Image (cartoon, rainbow, N blue to C red):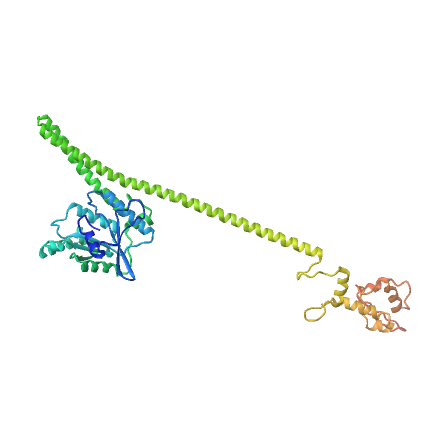
Length: 433
C-alpha cells in the first residue's frame, strides 16, 4: 500500500518479473486490486496484492476505500488471511503532502493497532536523493508521531528499499517467515461485526475528511461569490468572469465530495440490503430445517407406532394360534395340563414347590382308612381343610364311639379337643378350622 507513485508496481515487478499476474475477483468492484504470485521455493508460493492509492487521479478516495474494503472482506470471508502489509513511502518528498498524510491516516484506521506489529514501513527512491538528505527525512518520519512514530511504537518495522530485487525479497521474507497471520480492523468490523463501510473506523475517518474539505470549499465558494458581486458593482467585468470560473470550479469540487459521501452511504444501503437478504435466507433455511426435523420426527413416531401395532397384532395372533416365542406351537390345553402336571420340571431338575397342605391332604386321604382308631387319635393331626365332608361322620363315630349320639358335631370344630374316659384312655388332638 501507499500513495500513487510510491513504487508499489516497481517493487512487485522486481520480484515477479512482470509475470504470474492474477486479477482477484472475489466480488464486484475489485478488478483494480491486482494479485501477483511469487514462488519463494518449489514448495511455497505467496501472493502480493497491489492496491490503488488514496490520491488516485482517476478514482476518488471513497472508490479506493470501497475497492480495498471489498477485496479484504472477500478474502477474509474465503479464509484468506494476510501475513503482513508493506507500506511504501517516497523518501524523495521534501515534506509530507496532504494526500500522504490522509493516506497514512486511512492506513492506520484500516489496519488497527493490533495489526500494526505486522506492518513494514519501507521508504523508496533512495537512489534519487543524496544519502544524508534521505537519512534526515527518514529520521524525521520516525521521530514524528503523526507520521511513522505512532506506528513504530505499536510494533511496526522500518526498512529501506534500494530498488533492487535483493532488498525487496528481504522485506517480503520478513513477513512471509513471520509465522502468525494478521486480521485487519476493517475485516473485523465489516465481517465479524457486520458493519457497513460507512460505519467502520476507516469510513468514519474518510467521511470526516470529506466534511472538512466540503466546509473548506464552501467557504471558498462563498468568498468567490462575494468578490464576484463586488466586481460587478465596481464595473470590473473581467474580474467578475474570473470569479465566475472559480465559482464553477468550486461547485464542481463540492459536487464531487457530495458524490463521494453518497457512495459511502450507498455502500451502507447495499450492505444493509445484503444483510437483510442474508438474514431472510438464513431464516428460510432455518425454517426449512425445522420443518424437515419435524417431518422426520413425525415419520419416526409413525414408524414406532406401526411397529408397536404390528408387534401387538402378532402377539395376539400367536396367542390365538398357540405359537410360542421360539416359533413352535403349543399343545392342546387339556393334554398340556395333564403332562405339565406330572412332567413339569424346573431348570435344576426339581419339581416346583407345592403348598404344605396339598401334600398333607394327599397323605391323609391315603392313610385315614388303614390306621387303627388308637393310632389316629394318638398321632394324627387332622385338618378339616384336608378332609372331605363325607369322612366327618365316620371320623366322629370312630374316634368317640361311647359318646352319646346327641354330642354336638360342632365339638369337632374347636381348635383343640381333649376327651378323657376311664374305660377309653384316648387323647384326641384334632385341629379343626
